[in-house]
Image (tube, rainbow, N blue to C red; front, top):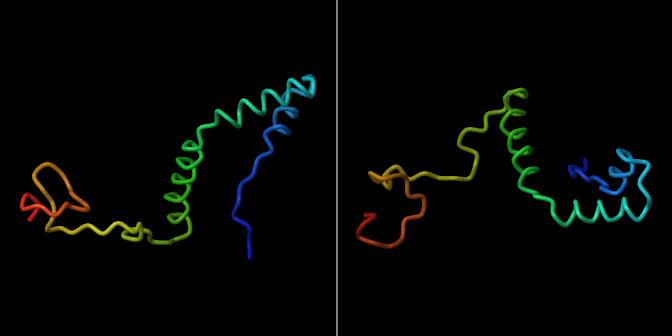
Length: 90
């Protein structure tokens, strides 16, 4: 089975881009990057790939996102996916 994990050694990356840094400087920079990293950017990039790869591979993804839309629950102000138990949504 293949491994579908993406890993980056941030310290190695810092040292690759700036080999003139001292070890202490490189460690401080790597620590700052890791503790302040916004992981949502990675998920956005992966989602973009998830949407484009199936097209290239001839795989249909329409309707396979796990979201079931009950057409009878469409309101005038928008779509309510999980309406609360209320007479307003019946």
